[in-house]
Image 1 (cartoon, rainbow, N blue to C red):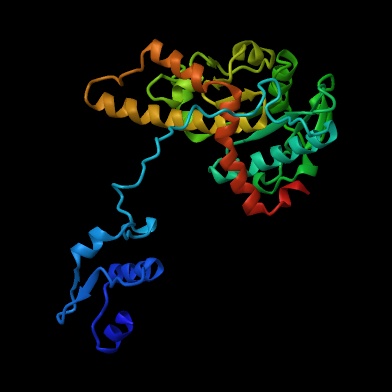
Image 2: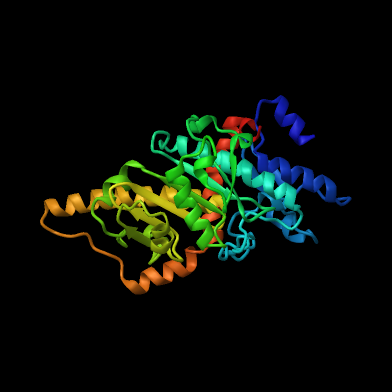
Length: 333
């Protein structure tokens, strides 16, 4: 009744006093008045004597308690992420049959072509190839004379490792010879990408490997080789060895990996590292200095934490997610 009379008289009741009124009505005892009284000015004064005599003190709801009164839960920091991808086959899943995986690889290869276009590599002689999931001796390679951003899954051309690529129409013989050499010498490789990207082409003129000047470079710690331009395709696999990438002098780069996802990730990062090193060396040369390199111990530590194929595959997932959203599945036709 007090709240109704105060509302009629135009006196605003504070929110906390309204809570006290409702709480008192719930707990009121016969013969006792309210433990507060209102003054003409609109303020609420507590009757201290009655409050002290009350057996159960009137308290506000738990939702209105202050931040200090709340019990603070311990902060749990995230642990090191675990990527559920096997190094021996970074794109295979337990519930995926061999036929489904073969189609999945071809679809990923078509998406990889569109990732290259999104990164600005459309006119850089990009060639993408993957190993067939059903027949390890059969390789699927991107077609020649076809816009890279329009390549579909069904347009990849199959070639056997024992066949002559010159006899297959629509395939660049020089590019396929390099891929054939790598697939034949590296059974663990399931994807190869090559291209004459702008900064890889410029940096390759130095004839030196990528310097360890930033954290991303540590992913390729002792994993990038350099070879001079040669017409002998067998020298490509010999120069690559067990590494991840190869810089061809006066031409560009070539990447070999367990999965097409990690191959795309490595290809893009090598281009960015070449760009960063060209800029860093030019800036340092203008001051008569040299860029500061990362120590071997730090490089090895970073490579052990982030240099595996699972980490490389995880880094490429945003690129493929963007392509799948943009293409709406047209690359899977």
